[in-house]
Image (cartoon, rainbow, N blue to C red):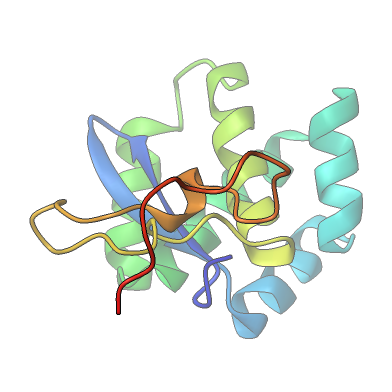
Length: 136
């Protein structure tokens, strides 16, 4: 799981970093009058409110490193006056990354993306042992 509880998602025509540290979660709770698990439930059941979606994205942008002014400008340009429904899955992913976490970079990956991915090998499987001789 991601130790930073952050997620990068496409929003407003580019990839953006979203993060909800405790301070941003508290601000979101105040704006939506509910906790993060209730927000996830609202997004999942379709019982969300406009500010559930808008404030989640706004707080996620601020937590991801944008100033309040910059984040507000992004929201004004890419959320307000646009259809809301396409943004619901983004908001849900932002809250879920804060509560549940997201997958880390694959183990063994180098900066260039070369290396072994130990997640792809299940060492606990009951497959036959390797026929390669043990190194001496």
